[in-house]
Amino acid sequence: MSALPVVLDLDGSVGSLASEYRFAMRDQQEALRFGCSLGRMRALERQLNTWLPPPALHGPVFMGSGDFHHLSWLLVARCIRAQGSTRGRLRVVVLDNHPDNMRFPFGVHCGSWVRRVAQLPEVEHVLVAGITSGDIGWRHSWENQLSPLRAGKLSYWSFGVETGWARWLGVASAFRNFPSAQALADALSEHLHRQRRPTYLSIDKDVFAPSVVRTNWDQGLLLETQSTQVIDALQGQLVGSDVTGEVSAYRYRSAWKRWLSAGDGQDMDIAREQLTRWQTKQHLLNLRLLARLGRARSNHDLTH
Figure (cartoon, one colour):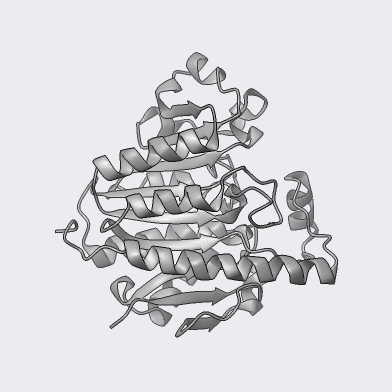
């Protein structure tokens, strides 16, 4: 059976994909968007286990806005269970403009889920690449969760951000800084090609330059050609993947979520005509990513 794409339709932002599995979830948008309790995540995990075919029988999971990126935690865990991965066997690569490893005491949210993945014993390492955000600069150093960085379970690959503070806190070895997006893409591609192992790839499209595609969040500078260079380096290693970072407009009913979202600088005030143009360009990129990810998909020769 071919690996057909999955759409978790949480916000109506993902256009139609050929032969897709699409699951209507817009009634859960308010509860899940931006962040949620661990109890809510456990309930969603049970739901996904009921709905979704085994990971080997479906392709990339598209889940809309980057506000839902914390759902990747559940998708990685499903992939581990299905693959029967042993301790330290799975590598997770995240293309993202942000580290998604920030402190969040109210459950899990789109900026804190990476620590949860790094804690999984089956995960060898989480590599977050493409960061240009000040989230890893000294002003926000206190917000980063240091334990996975210190434990060697997480590394940041960035460019254009001053991260000298990491030396003072003993985590400099977890930081790799590059002079440009191309230098990062070259080094990452070589690393992935040389160190072959089962890999889960998560793409948040806020990693891309605005000239490539537009999102609701502050964006990086990665070009599409650089992302495909990275995907191609994973040829035969990819055992699961997801894509977030669609653009959608939403007003939270919860004042608390409105406050958190505004505090993170999220842009939700988008004119309808502009939103349509941006979503059209997003859809075309999704089609290209889908084809590329399909070609990189593993034949499972690395998983056993």
